[in-house]
Length: 372
Figure 1 (cartoon, helix red, strand yellow):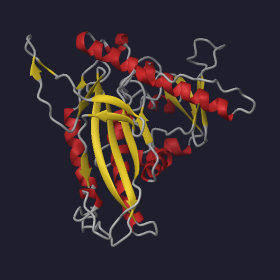
Figure 2 (cartoon, one colour):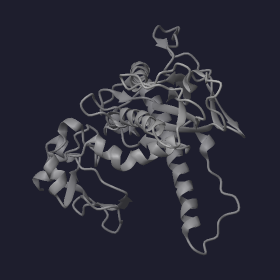
Figure 3 (spheres, rainbow, N blue to C red):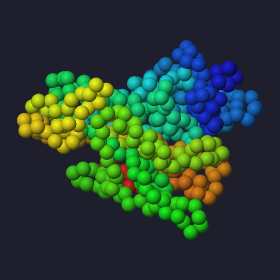
Figure 4 (cartoon, rainbow, N blue to C red):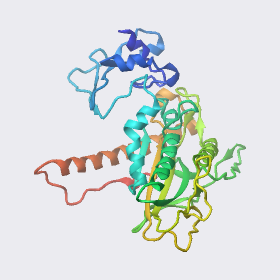
């Protein structure tokens, strides 16, 4: 095995291919100069000689990831996956955001519904990627700042739209939806420990609005700092727990949702820019008040969902029992449903793009099988 194989050593704690923790990541020059990077198997965690579990070509788009012959127990089975881009251990979240996420965020500001989620095995750095640190911001803070920059740019352009931004923050825990922006008091159980109250948040389908989450608190925001304060409060309420693979494992799926409403301003500007770069909510769309000669016309509504999924996990690997085991079962079930939905959608897309292929008269997408 090469030094690079040892460097990749499953640093996230899960021991899975690609589980690289930021603190254990190799140098940036490894990712930028190598033509082929390999990630080691879990054997490097146990002290036995490491081996290259996966061969990952870098710098190519798209990339084909193949299991190494050294670790493939069945050479007749072809374990290869095609992905849009591979980001090596030396990559930063800002680069990932620019290449893979920014276009989705911009499209959401232009009236399209967008969704970005971090998916993978437990303890592989999903929450770190979405949240980040002050020195290396994650996808969520980068997207929030991008949205406000977009508004500032649009206000000086020919379109001259005004915007109303509302945020909500929820978690799905054991197939129940909880509002992370509202501190709900826990009721004591007969055995002593506190237990979360029953959630009164419900999902409905509307012919005009699509899927509606009823009972979820939404906050009007006018600056990135206001959003970050709400995110920090929500993160403190999110459920985490310790397993054999992760000291602070997410036990729920979290969904940060930004609702964007905009319309063309037909009179004087009604949203002033403050010295700190925020948007003044005085006489603005953000407060629902507009001047007599102000904005009018149709309102464009879209949403951006930024999702930090709980990681899939094996009971054998995590050693979970009791409530932790129950949480893992709900997590795995919802992720399986998500995977099934994505598969069915991609299957339909592939048929549409194949000349001469017959589209089924009715194709069932099982999205009602899970709250996620």
